[in-house]
Structures are given as C-alpha cells and as structure tokens.
Image (cartoon, rainbow, N blue to C red; front, side):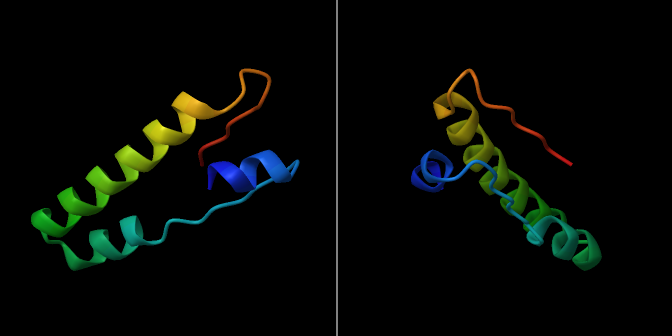
Amino acid sequence: MLKTLEQYDLVLFEYYLTDKAGHEQDPKIANRVLTTLDRFLTEILENIDEKDTFVLS
C-alpha cells in the first residue's frame, strides 16, 4: 500500500471485514479484524509524507 501511495495522487481503500465481523457478532473475530486494521493504519500513518492528507471514513 505504501508504494501505491507514492505513485498516485488519490488512493481509496475499502476494508469490508469490519462490517462482516459486526454481522458475525463474534468478539473473537471482531478483535482479530480490528487488530489487523490497527496495525495497517499505524503503518500507513507512520510512513506517509507530512504533506499528505489522510481521511478515514
């Protein structure tokens, strides 16, 4: 993903597993999905250029 961010002016990413985990109503699945998402977002935020804009919706 970081290489993609360097190549393009706008990058959209959809992480549907949070929605799926919510429908499952299983705390173990939700915890695993959120832990993965947290690691992903941390990596992005720690490595993007300070001039870039990051929007999470």
